[in-house]
Image (cartoon, rainbow, N blue to C red; front, side, top):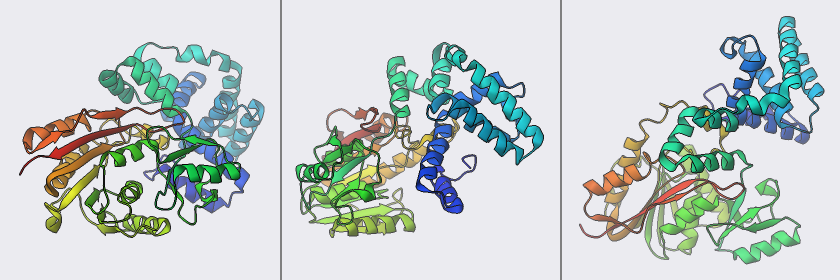
Amino acid sequence: MFRSERYANLSLDAAVKKYELSPRDKTLFTRLFFGVIERKITIDYLLSRFSDVPVNRIDPAVLVLLELGLYQILYLDRVPDRAAVDECVTLAKQHKEQSARFVNAVLRRAVREKENVPALLDLPGNKGLSLRESYPRYLVSLWTEQYGKERAEEICRAQNAPAAITLRVNTLKGSAADYGERLREAGIPFHPAVLCDTGITLDASLSPTELPGWDEGAVFVQDASAQAAARCLEAKPGETVLDLCAAPGGKSFSLAMDMENTGTLLALDLHPHRVKLIEEGAGRLGITCLKAAVGNAALPLGAWEGKADKVLCDVPCSGYGVIAKKPDIRLKKKEDGAELPALQGAILAAGSRALKTGGRLVYATCTLNMRENEDVTNAFLETHPAFVRKGEPTTIFPAAGENDGFFIDVLEKTHE
């Protein structure tokens, strides 16, 4: 399924509905689905060592079975190796008898030789890091070039750890401390989120909809880094604030809470169905100062030009800081997203024209790529002398079980 152009989460949801999986089967299926995507680069390299047939010449359906089997053998301790092999062979028989023999031979060889896997992956430089941590070589090279070898390794390992579930407490209805008490009473383990005083990170895996107060809008899901980005705008009660590229709405909701639900907040997005998500979320949270609208943030904002006290440009990006939550980003090609800096610059320029003199603009991405980050804001400042940077740009690197990777740059308009 993940070989299609669909987003991985949409493919997963469609499969779960189609086959009406039980909660237990859904949990295992989800782990296998995302696990194979996450470790595909490593798995396919090892298959090339365990199989006499080149990976690119293996029947796609058979390759999926081999990837599923090898993932279980190498990364799932609770599934016995023999059971993993037998199940994949059984499935292969439904495809072709000859395929079953091939799957059986390759996976049994993998079981015999799995103790040798660390040595097979112990290669020098970026190639070794790419294969061990299962990231495309171009991305490992990019991080090494921009942030150094040690930081590149840290980024890879942090985003291979299970992603954190962090909540933003709805401060229109209570404090983080108050909500923490509700979690304690419900026996749900948690700790205060890093980077923000409005966040709570769960130490248990459960659906947010099962949390106390979810239906009444006590909390919503928002990574700690995203909360920090919204806070940098310093939105205040009574102001006029624009959030460009706002869907699914998390930062808009945070801004509304910082504004104490007063003033005017426009949440703009290109897609009508995503605007509806913003409206639904605002309704659950009891936010009334927000207006969601369809619009292209890269184009002039018409009547809004020169009217905003604050503007948030959380622009579309390559997403290299959220791979822990979106592992299919690893499957992108190097050339994918080459047009992004031009789009990001256009959105930043449009947002700047909406700002009053003395106003503040925050440029943010959830990627780790200087070409989409510092290079974009540096180019903007060179051509927009009315703007100055407040402090230094901030790169938040991903931390295992805590926060995503993010970039934040705060700009202010000093004169017309």
